[in-house]
Image (cartoon, rainbow, N blue to C red; front, side, top):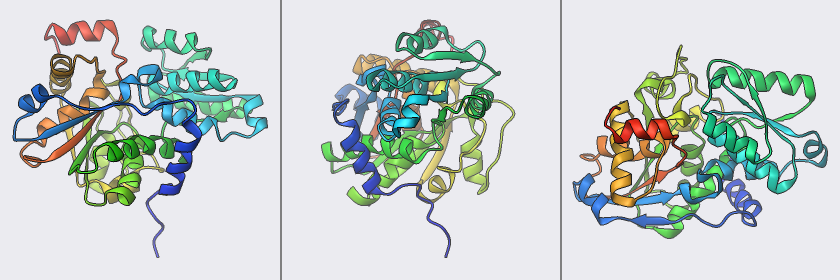
Length: 327
């Protein structure tokens, strides 16, 4: 018998929800008639506002899920993670709330606004490597050298359980959903969501979307085997990964009904559309779900569909380019 593709089960998601509840309130799930009209096809769009959580992103769920499970010795030594932004901000915020030392590895030249936010919440910042994957290698070195507890942005069961709490909230707020479209960087959001939906709403169909310039997981899903990329270039920092991850890849293969890529111009248009119709700022990864829905609108015509503004931490220079139509 083959091993289960699911890294955690629904009871793990419920346990994560219990642990993080003292620190987070559920984020809103809202409808916008102007967004429905812009998407077209009779699709009723339900927007999950993870950009309203502390740190303006869903990653704070994942961080709290892990840090509330640490042993006393792990808390004393501290934790380390690698990030382009939101995972590190989530770790920094959770560490501050729980009194746990946090070190965050970021690529050299990482966005200064995101770096400042992490330092502002008390994290020690280490700049190393040319991209996210090389920052992960730097975090691994600190685990070996200093005995810190690694909190990977994807490859941790408690991260995935924490991410699944978001979809529990979605399905409790709108049990009549037909589909959910998730942006995929490492896959914690989508895999956690599929685990929740398998129990709460098995008829809900799950789709994934990735940036065309950072398509390692999408291409691997299509090929049926893990593939690596030499680069990951996209305005969607949260999607800028070059590899698949053991904790999520088989689950994505088992659970996704479809998987699309979107171009940078499509992501930028989705940022503009969310700003116009919801008056919310979405970063690239936070708008990718809408960009994917626009790609899938013929397939999802007439359906109740949820998307997630998974983060709103777009930097000023990127936002200017998007609003000026230069992307």
